[in-house]
Length: 220
Image (cartoon, rainbow, N blue to C red):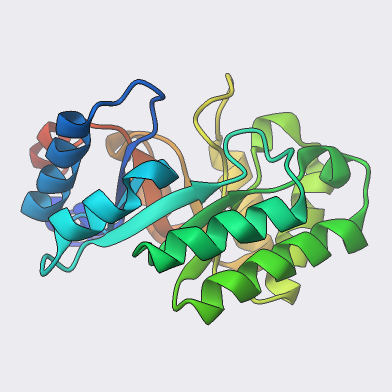
């Protein structure tokens, strides 16, 4: 990995600048969007209620609006996840991060897991958005992680992601390596300075909280 490849601009372009706290207020959401535009981050990831506001705040910046579906537990029905996706893309989201059904994945229910991912992927793609499937790796067995990756690839989901950031344990380099082995495009919910080299080899993005921007000058 060259110094150029790990420049602040290169790392910044991989980051989903994220604010998913339940008590996040409008000004904090707007500030997150402004930071993302200033530093050239890939996307701003926020809860669904903020999609319209963030889309307007980012207009013309080249930064995408990302939101979450079935978040953070993944334990909603396929119909609910599709409805969330339809509303999000209607409101301006161009990226959907969906939490997989963790219970079905651990139970080895490949058909059910794949069918749900397929339904949400179709809704996202029909609206011009991409779908990233969140595994919540800390709660899945290795077999379940591989099952979800294969299901996501089979139905043309665009990326797989390690975790929501709401479960202790989080992602590991080993998780990224496993996911990269299965599908190629993997991403992690960790601060950018910690995983940047591995992440840039494995995939597209890291979910990073507000406060990521001051870290970028340190990555060089």
